[in-house]
Amino acid sequence: MSTVTGLVLTFNGARLLDKCLASLSFCDTLLVVDSQSTDETRAIAEAHGATVLVRPWEGPGPQFRFALDQVATDWVVSLDQDEYLTDELRENIIRAVGQDTGQAGYYVPRRSFYYDRFLKHSGWYPDYLLRLFRAGRMDVQVSGAHYSFHPLGPTGRLAGDIVHHPYRDLREHLDKINAYAQAAADEMRAKGKKGGLTRAVAHGLGRFAKLYLLKLGILDGRAGFINAVCGAFYAFQKYIRVSEKEGTGVEQG
Image (cartoon, rainbow, N blue to C red; front, side, top):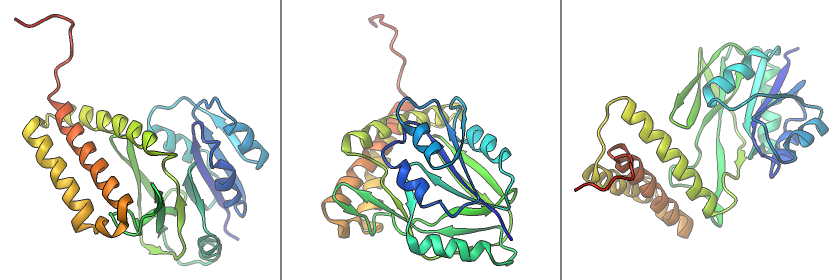
């Protein structure tokens, strides 16, 4: 009989962690690796019977590699602290791990709430992600502040959604844009890539056109338009910050 670990990395995730862990209750083990939360995150995890390990945040790559070193089961289901499984996906995961298919993992769709609705377009859905995988048959890859799992072997797809509530409100979205744009700009600068106003404007406009027109964000109503504007702002900030000069407090004559 295959065994499963439900894995969640946390930091001040009390908002949705109860629902997240409840959706993983079928797992043989719940593992929470917490980055020194100051809210009720650890208490919520312990109430669900999770093993809670506390480790300072060094980025998604080191954190996931540490977490995966602790896994002793055949399979891993990985969720973010603001995600949970629908009943349909939960049942399909249980069925998949009970079969000897030889798959390294399974991609599952993610449905995300933004502004006033779940987006059906805008490049946000179905947003297939590798979130069910065999231990040792997955590689973590990191770009800026973002991570992704890449299978080491054949994969399949499962029906049913991960439900995602990434932001409390637009203020939190803008805060994350600020952080993500800075991380991306730092990475680009380290690789010797160029920024500047012209590139920033071009990439910002291109990002808007991609999200709103090519990815049919126009069909997502106000939420689609707002998301496309925020996407453009992120791209603009990323490229403009690459060429930003550090302030020294000395007036240039």
